[in-house]
Amino acid sequence: MKKQIFFASLLFASVASVTFASDFKEATQVHSVNTIKEAVSVTISVTSERGPVAGALIKITAGGLTIGAGTTDANGNTTINIPSYNKQLVRIDVTHSMFKDDKKVDFILENGSTIQFTLKPKTESLDAAAAREAESVKRQEEAKKAQEEANRQKEEAQKRAEQVNKEAEEARKAAEAKKAEAKAIQEEAEKKRKEQEARLAAEKEAREQAAKKLEEEAAARKQAAENGRLEDAKKDAKVSVEEAKAMQKEQEAKLKEAQQRAEEQKKNAKEEEKRQKEAEAAKKEALKQQKEADKAKKEAEKLAKEAEKEAKAAEKAKKAAEKFEASVAKLDAEQASIDKSRDKLKKKGDKLQKDLEKAKGDTSKIQTKLTKLDLEHAKLNEKQAKLDKKRAKLIK
Image 1 (cartoon, rainbow, N blue to C red):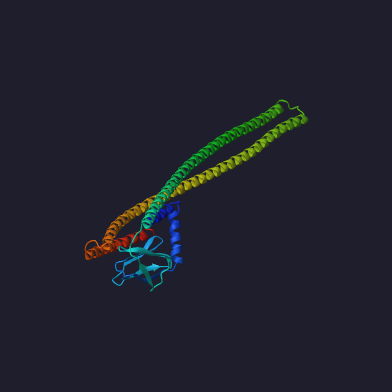
Image 2 (cartoon, one colour; image 1 turned 90 degrees about the horizontal axis):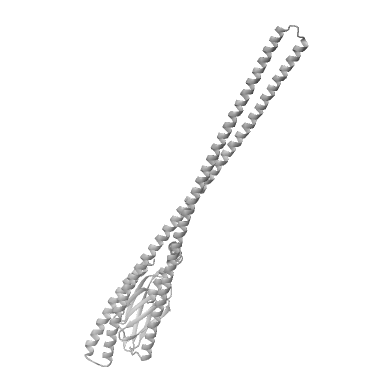
C-alpha cells in the first residue's frame, strides 16, 4: 500500500507543470552525477531458540523499492548481492510462517558484513491482532487520502492544460486581429497616397495651363503693340519721337509685367515642387507604417506559433502522464495479485502452525506442508523482485 502511495504521489507530482518532464529528468541527471554508487554483498543470518531457521524470507527495501531479496538455507544464511547502492538507509524485513516477523529500519549496509536476526515463535495475542487490524485500517485510510490527493492533482493538471489551450486560442485571435488591423492601415495609407498624387497632378496641370495662357496673352499683346506701333508710324509720320518713346516705354512696362507674372508662375512651380516633396515624405511615412504593420503581423504569427508549441507540449505531457498512470495501475494490479497470494499462503501457514503447536495431526506431514508453503513464498519473492525491477525501470 505504501508503494502505491509513493507511485501515485510521484505520478501526479510529475504533471504539476508544463515543464515537469524536463525538470524531473534534469533533477535525476544531477542526482546520478553527484552520487557515487557501488555494489555490496551482505549475509543475513537468521536463528531462533531452536537453532538456524531455514526458509526465512528476506527483503531489503530503500525508499519503498525492493533492492534485494533472498531465502535462508539449512544453516539459516543467505547472501544478497546489490549491484547499485549509495549508503542510503534501508529496511530489512524477515518473515517465516512459523515465526514472528522481524525487521531492521534505517539501517546502512556494509559490504561483506553479516546481519543477525533472532526470530521468536509465532504466538499472536489478542492485542497483537487488534494492533495489526488497526495498522491495516490506518494503511487503508492513508491509501484513500493518497488517492484523493492524486485525483485533486490530476484535476489541477487538467485545468492547467485547459488554461494553456485557452491562452493559445486567445493569442491566435489576437494575432488575427493585429493582422487585420495591419492590413487596414496599409489599405488606408495606399488610398491616401493615391488621392494625394491625383490632387497634386491636377493642380500642376492647372498651373501649367494658366502659365501657358498668360505667356500666350503677353506675346499676343506684344505683337499687337508692335504691329500697332509700326502701323501708327506709317499713318502718322508726324508723331514725335517723344510719343514713340512713350509708347515704347508703355510696351516695355507691359512686357515687364508679363515677365513678373512669369516669375510668379516659376515661384508657384517651386511651391508645387515643395508640395510634391511633402507628398513623397507622406508616402515614405505610409511605407514606414506598412513596415511596422508587417512587423506587428510577424510578431503576432510568432506568438501564435509559440502558443501552438506550448499547447503541443502540454498535450504531450498529458499523454505521458496518462501512459505512466496506466503503467503504474498495471504494476499495482500485479502487486495486488502477489499480496493476495501471499495472504493466502500466510493463512495456510498460520493454520498449520496452530495444528503443529496443538500436535493436531501428523507432525511430519505438517512440517512438509510448511516447507511447501515456504517454497511458494520463495516463488512469490521472485515475482516480487521482477515486479520491483519493473517499477524501478518505470521511474528512471
